[in-house]
Image (tube, rainbow, N blue to C red):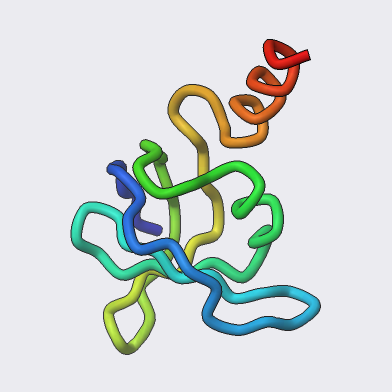
Length: 86
């Protein structure tokens, strides 16, 4: 397992299915997440700092097994914005 820390860029959904496949770049490394990808999309947006743990595939992409958001998640920020607007 390899860990990597950095800022999320180029976040996009590669494959729509029951369990979507999400692509993003982290510190210049191409990353993919399928397990917990819906939670990942609720927690992370471009520009957020995260820490990930995963394995490299044959193409050199990092396949994410676990992730942690450093600071507030996207959902927390949205909820806070909603509370202050009311």
